[in-house]
Image: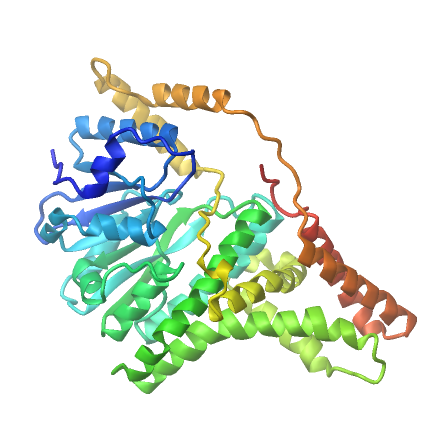
Amino acid sequence: MYKGPACPELSRGEVGLDPPPRRGELLRAELFPPSSSPHSSLVLDDSDDAATSALIREEVEKWQREGVRILYRHRVIRDGYKAGNLKSAMNCSYVKDYEFVVIFDADFQPQEDFLKLTVPHFKGKEDVGLVQARWSFVNKDENLLTRLQNINLCFHFEVEQQVNGAFLNFFGFNGTAGVWRIKALEDSGGWMERTTVEDMDIAVRAHLKGWKFLYLNDVECELPESYEAYRKQQHRWHSGPMQLFRLCFVDIIKSKIGFWKKFNLIFLFFLLRKLILPFYSFTLFCVILPMTMFAPEAELPAWVVCYIPATMSLLNILPAPKSFPFIVPYLLFENTMSVTKFNAMISGLFQLGSAYEWVVTKKSGRSSEGDLVALVENEKQSKQQRVGSAPNLDSLAAKEELYLKSEPKKKKHNRLYRKELALSFLLLTAAARSLLSVQGIHFYFLLFQGVSFLVVGLDLIGEQVE
């Protein structure tokens, strides 16, 4: 059985420290040697919730008794969050015996043949540093919020990452479901804690060092089902890239990569989706357009108000044709989210306080139908082979249920978002002004956009939060 030497944090994690409960990042990493010997699994627990850690540790011990090469690592001091967790694991001495590492977030559900489909792509290609799998979502049809997220992310995976992977051998690492060549990680400086997008950071540095990336399909995970979780996720995803852009801009200019790759990195990768589009949506549709209703002499051309957003929406929805009925809600929701994205972009660009916030995205823990079937089959087999007092899923479930019963129940409620409510008032007032001044061409847009802001401001989209 593979144990591996201990690291400093592990001793702190085993002495029974009991800080206030708080959920942290849970990752799984797989290490592969260059030979055909078995790979090793690492469960990287970065939480300080004692009950959760106990459940994870017991599950790992069960697999160890069955002969699986798996190691549980627990950090109590959460310095650097996810980047710190990965950096701590990769700094252990046993990593030198391995050539590749694959990383999964806790909510990812890879198929059994995931490794067979990804690792062989490194064979004979010494300049390939990353093989990234596309995400699919087990809960994309759960509610309106998850449907709209699926449209946005399908465009990102099907268009942005596939095109960049095919023509430039580069795209942003998605932070999970990717296989890295450990040499590429080390050559690029390893995991750094300087931004909240450690995955994008390592990808940019590896690209500047000349490493190539490959993009494949696919692995299942979850989408956040509450607006609060989604809003915090989007803040991090738009604030972090602006932080990284400040840090990497000079390095990109000085790097030896070609002019078009520099242009792709600066304009398409950093500025277009993370800065220009949020700025365009927020200033035009949330500020300038409604204000023109109070100034009759001001007039915006139809191509600015109608044609550009309509074209953008059509392009975004093409990779998800089944979502076509949601094209209008998608356009309205993206304009509504531009408030959060614009705020995040400003905080990251100018290093404001909220740029350093790291909030783990809350998920519901849903499983795909295939995973549930496999779980039942595996449990039947393990029950036939189990001897003595080996832990099983029933005992784990019973302990988790007992823990949940001992916890005070928290009521779910709707939050109020002041910025969205203020903009809803402005847009609805502008819609009324447009109707009174017979500017009907803008009335319907302002009305529906105002209602969209009102729905989001009252937290009526997605699941409620505790």
